[in-house]
Image (cartoon, rainbow, N blue to C red; front, side):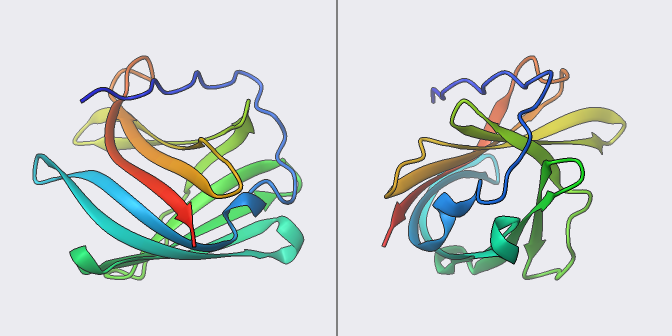
Length: 162
């Protein structure tokens, strides 16, 4: 399977602004493609997204009945640092992932990165919002074991506005 390359991470990120996630507000149908138990699976989903706090926040309720899965995305702009943080809550745990992925919008794509430890191995995870139009967008997730030089995709979502 061939994937679009992950855009380069900025050395000086563009400061975030209220409303950067306004494109995401509304009702969506989502075509998911992700790795489950080592194999790529495709399944439908849906989401409802609300902008909050005069554009410095965005709350997403994701529902994937085909996989008995739901969760919440919470995106917040730190007005002091002008950096966005993208947090996740899985409905099974109810626990907010912290510190979340931090990032910015660069050349029409939102790039949100976190570092984590995988059994003693330093890893990066990235979430990319791109192909943004008034009626659609794409989100994809990938991981890197080499500091971001190469990326392995593990989830792609194609969003279509309802």
